[in-house]
Length: 194
Image (cartoon, rainbow, N blue to C red; front, top):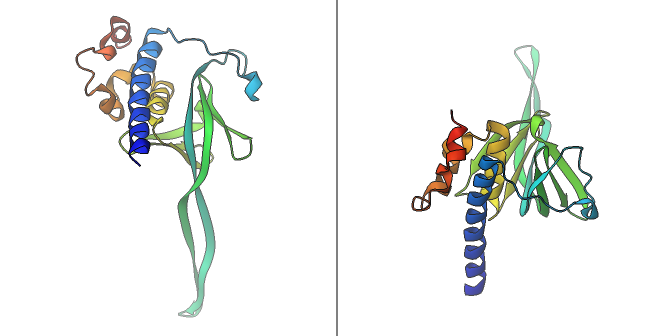
């Protein structure tokens, strides 16, 4: 039990350090090039670049609708619809975060992906280890687990712009404890705000 807790703590520490480094690389425009991911079964678009890879749990909102009740009410028919929804844990997968999309392999090798331009909402909760995305089709999904800081950095950069890496409140926990080295305050990052 103690070993498991220690490993999880180490994974969280690594993810925070990786997220900070990734934010600096994105801000400076100096992302390390990832090897071609074709051997993993992902075909990249022309100009698409893999920014990072993470292991995370995928959750999806399930919605069931049904007519709950029908009755005669003052001479008319009354009915109402009940909508139940909840988060379903869809398992762990390997996710690639690129400049075009989030794409991953889940279940028994099923490939799923969402393009950044189709995402209309994003809630980053670093402390809760969850990033929730709203798709323009009405679908909601979340990536959860210790790698969430990395997912949060890429999501903020893609959906709000690179300059938001310095100011977005959801990334505040990444800035705490980083005051001595101040990786978020590089001249290249500050030029983005001008």
